[in-house]
Image 1 (cartoon, rainbow, N blue to C red):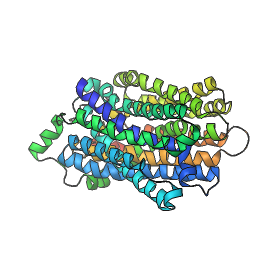
Image 2: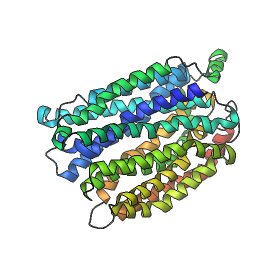
Image 3: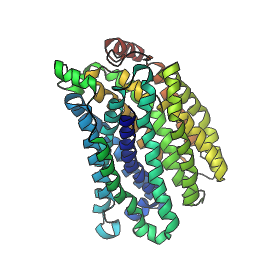
Image 4: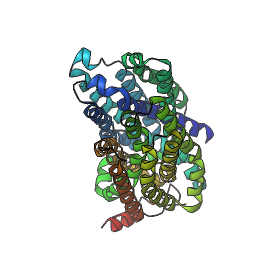
Length: 435
């Protein structure tokens, strides 16, 4: 389990490094480089638009790789998704800017971001199921939390590289070529991740399904017909995590540097420190999920998010590093209270034959609502001289929506993965609650 968990963590860290390095670049440099004819705010919005495309393609990637995972195994998903995302990220670092290619430059950026999202859409389902379906029943949330530590690690890697380049290069050098280096580094990280993952064995549950002929012929069709209410509920439930995380990691970075005049280095350090804390506490929160249940932790995280968004915005608006760090830390601790246990919770809601597709589609659909729209909506709502209370209201609203969706979902602890709550019993509960 330790070796498997490490491989899952390393892979998700690499793939989320790829995804996050684009978000940070979008907040800092992609606007003026690829949309120079726009105003500064419009350029940032356009850059966040290309950022959002990655979230739109993630559900498509989860459907594609979910089919592979449910038909051919969880292991192939982990290898193929990592390779696809890494190749697309390296290619982003090679795209000429608007000054060289004109309109073709942002179009290429858009296409590569779309491909990047396809790969990441498959990564989460493969990595999580490989740990969940190997893990001991009463420690399932703990072991499944290791892939969830990957995103904070990937974020720290991405922003650490950008922070180092930002501190070591002049602004002109960073805009000319320095911003490309983190994208090129993705190739090295992807190669290392593939080496770690190539020796992993398939999960016992999938091997059993393959031997007994119980694999789904068309997983997506089965999910659409028999579990669509469950997919929509899980998508709405998880929207808060995406909204809070990207409000802190992407929108706040742009707002702090452009509107408040805080240096890029200070903003990155504040955000990175808060993300590091959330990554460290993730396994400990997951242990609570094994003891008290998945649903209570998720509800607590949503409630904390709804209550903390206004204080977070107020602390951000002070432009004081320590206060901003406090605001970000509170938000991400609320976020991780929910997301530390969802890696165990979502697979338990679906029967094994469609688990890779159902869990991954629900997880990534949430990203469209919470991740794709948040930087765009927040940037548009942050007008005026005072604190951007509209952003706080939007984030609190998302948190309340997620709270309501979690309230309609059943508890799944500690039922074995082999007898999931996502079969007929849980589906009936989810459908009745949705109605």
